[in-house]
Amino acid sequence: MADRPERKSRPLTTAQVLRTERVTPHMIRVFLGGEGLAGFSVGEETDLYVKLQFRQPGVDYPEPFDPEVVRRDFPREQWPKSRTYSIRSWDPAAKELAIDFVHHGDEGIAGPWAASAQPGETVLFGGPGGGYAPRAEADWHLLAGDESALPAISAALERLPAGAVARVFVEVSDAAEEQKLDSAGAVEIVWLHRGGRPVGESLVEAVRGLEFPPGEVHAFVHGEATRGNTRSRATGGAARTRTAGSPRRASGTGRRRRKRPRRPAEPTPHRLNALSDRPPADDRPSRSADGSHT
Image 1 (cartoon, rainbow, N blue to C red):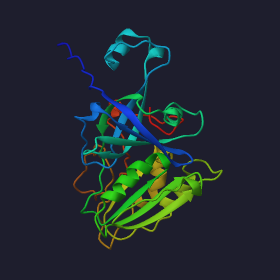
Image 2: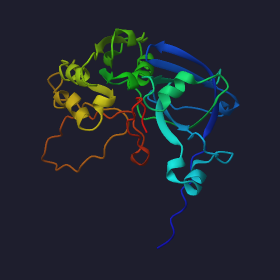
Image 3: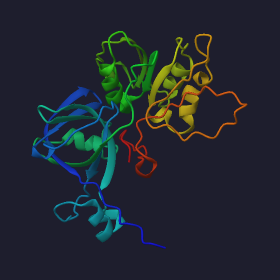
Image 4: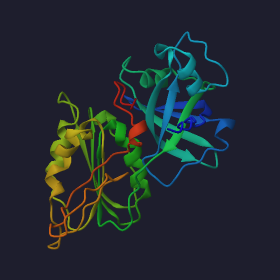
C-alpha cells in the first residue's frame, strides 16, 4: 500500500489586538489588525469563523509557531487550546477584523482572555472558513440562535436585500444583552430572555411555535440549543411544513448532508436541513464553557 501523503497544516495568521469594546455586559468585541492581515481575505459567507490558538502558559514554543511541530514534539497536555469563533466583521480597507466573545467571568478560555486583552497583544488563528449566506432567491429567511450566533446573524441581516422577509429569534440571558441589529430587509426580531431557564429552551419553543410564511425558507439555526438532537427539536415542526398549496423544498444553511438514494416511486420529503456554521467533519469544533467551539 502506498504511503499516504503527509498532511500539511494550514499556515496561521498573526494579528495584534487593536482595541476592545464592551458591547453588552457579557459580550466583548476584540478588534485585530497589523501587518499579518495584509494578505487576509474572506469569502461571501456570513457565518465566517476563525480558529484561535491559545498557548499554554509556561510552555516555551518554537518560533515561528507551527501547530504540527508542537503536536509532533510536545506532550498533548502542552498543546495549545484551539477555539473557533465567528467573525463579526472584516474591513478590507482598514485591514481590521472584529470578533465577539461571550464573557461569563472566569469560565472557559477565550472569554477571560478577551476581557483582559491589551493593545499590541499577538493573536494566532487559522482560517477563515464558512458555509452560509442568505440566498437571494429564497422567499423568506429564518435566523435563530443564542449569543454565540449573534455575529453570524448580524452579518446575515446586514446582507439581506431591501424588502427581503426574515424572521429572527435570538435567545440571550436578559434585556441588557440585546443588541441593535441593522438590515434593509423586512425583518421581525424576537428577543428571548432566558432568565433562569435552561439554555436554548426558549429558543426551541419559539422556533417550533412559528407559523411559517408561504414559500421557500432559507434557514440558519445555530447555538447550544441547535446542536445534535436539539436542533431537530427546534426545527422539527417545520420540517414537514407544506407551503403555499404546492409543496416546495425548504432548504437549510451551510454544507448539505449527503442525500440518501431515493426510489423513483417515493415522494420527495420536504425537510428543513438546518445546519449551522460548522466546519467540515474532520475539523468540527465542539462547544466549550465560554460559548466558543473547541
